[in-house]
Length: 485
Ligand code: GLN
Image (tube, rainbow, N blue to C red; front, side, top):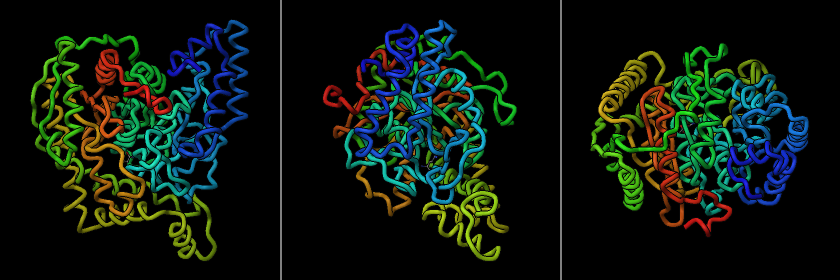
């Protein structure tokens, strides 16, 4: 098939050059043939996707008005609810849970004509950076099957990188869209907190979580984001006036753009080869007329520790409902016994670790020393970034300090795993939009460029990513990787 992006697919279906049925069949066949090696999907929705494709084709034939994603297949992370389908968040405790309603993003994308093709593997409840904490399977990086794809949205990202689907949905609490996007060479965007409704997203840390798109181009990200975005009565944290037509705002011109490059993003444990690739990418923008301003974000080193207090605190509270009574597989025995068995057997190691940390730091006597302190750090980081963004338009740096590592390499070393989120957590803590765009290779593995801007300036990060993609030629498809370098 010659169409790789959502926009190309939609236009080809609209013009009658191809049909939605042919597109869905192509992707389902490719998944059947190749996903055995990658492990991106937990399940595909073959019948339902083909039936929906036929409906779209009938609309095309009838000359009806089509949605802006008519016939575009989308893969969905296993923590986003699709009515009638399992949503297990990669956890054994939700193995038998069937969603009873659609997440708002699902409703909106479906109205735009999208076709949901399957659900993808993830770290359990989103806790992890390698997709290895899933209770179901390991996902492999399509660029090198011995490597992890990053996480926690590793299944969604691997599906896009392998060419199994043009678009997938992920969620990002501390980097779970951007870090795997960087490690698998795709575009991944975390919107401003509150731009996209969290209704129907299985909560990890509610003050940090955002759903966002994974795809190959900034234009696709703009389209998918603007369809999902906007005020939702079911999520009181959604922002007013967030229905911005981002794709109409793209100027693709960086002349006069002020890029802040924080020195702290190149200090802490970054692979020097990654630094080279990222600096080269910034040079491309400078050639396009942008101006680099060296800045300092002195609180950067505190973002990760603050995140790993706030996140487990909120996660421990959110996960209290999975007790086998209200949610989760019910266990035998009296009340206490039943809770213990359901949670003891239903949760994996990393989830238990976070619940223990979370309950500890929230307990009387420790909350002031840890949780409240972390909240104070959060405010300070927010102020630091807001201050920096007064003198620059965007902040640019690496998405991840390393390229993809070997499967199992960091699995038993939680601190090493947490450190891979060092550059991504700031954006969640401050609620600002951030995108990762492929910018080259180190050791034949993809590297991502991270672009951040102020609250509500989602169009800006997409615009810069789009200008960068126009000026470069990083082929972002692992299935024809030989052409990529
Ligand atoms: N890797 C981070 C964590 O384990 C981020 C997870 C996420 O964004 N869902 O918490």
